[in-house]
Image (cartoon, rainbow over all chains, first blue to last red; front, side):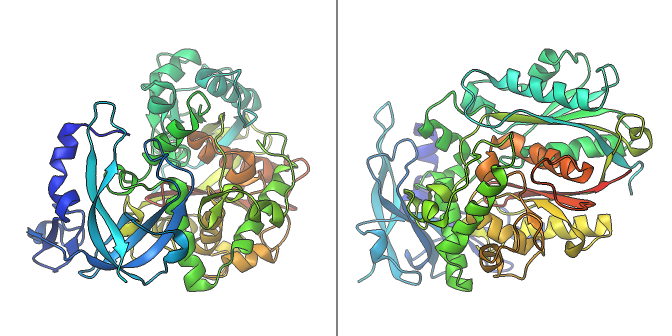
Length: 133
Length: 389
């Protein structure tokens, strides 16, 4: 699905600089930011927080069959990364092949172009991760 | 507390497969007509319609599927509802029908499931099915459904030593079962080698680890059990209907190697039916990918956690082994017309309990279970069915 300008603009804080949120009651951090803590619900107060961008590979797969818009990217490595602050997220691992990646490997966030298939020419940027040597 | 017991009095389904000659409404109409004929009903008795279908919008440009069905099945003006819960649309629709009869609000309902998937390109199908996951935080960064289950498979291999060959054995068993089912999309037996040498989709999952793109429909007629005897030689009672939810995105789960929604729904269903996992004779479980069947038989309590791969490779889930899993061929071989799958599972279990599963009959089948999962496990519906003659 291609995303239009409004949703792209709305997600800039999260996608460009990993802006997240935190429950002040149970201290759980959320990425993407949640506006309601699923554990504390109305008792929890939510505030903004950031992330260092450092984490570890929790699981990964080398994708060979692409969805619309990523046909030119295959094969690419998709991972669940666990950030050092706790939350896990789904992202591509840039500049590597599947055979380079291991569960537990340290990674850091990088700013990359994600998609450029928008019919109106809109470029989508966001986070990917890369292995820390 | 149930107000009334509920029974399945008629079942029907189309041949699953790539069906270029027929469209959405042809498919559901055929399944519905077969279910009505099976129940010896004419149609005037029906007072409600529920239909599971996941993505007619992106797949055929059609929403408002409830109205379409009532119209084309000649059932106006009865209420008709489209139910959507991704790949669990069928199972959740069945639960709506169950509740409608159990509550006393309806006396005879048709529950259908349908998906027409081959009218658009493969990439468009991948994108449409992606809607079962988290569009903004899984799909946008590049996830596909095979990749999401591959992420779970990688963890299962790491945590429990599950192997690619063990996962392949699930596909081999389901293709063998499918070879005895004339409704199955694939009726050809395969070997471990077939799976292992097939094209990589999202490592470690290969083409033969994945369920196919399928056109198809299935339907059930539900009535109160007390009235079922006059319409069915062997009514099939729905002794449990349970559903549970979990996070939309896989990455938000504490564990990637179990589906908590399956565990919660199964526990509720076993309590409701007053049975244990060891009492189940035959089960249709949601094997959208081979790893999904491995996790399902663990989470449903048929084998110990972590032993799903080994149990499959050891043949414990084969036809008439310890527990017969996916006698229809499962999603892998029978096919996966997404919204139809949860209903097809109940059709297959009904045939098994009535002793009508020609060529793949489970001996003395008395109690069966259906397990239908939406997305990567954000929705799960479990039903337990029992022969009631």
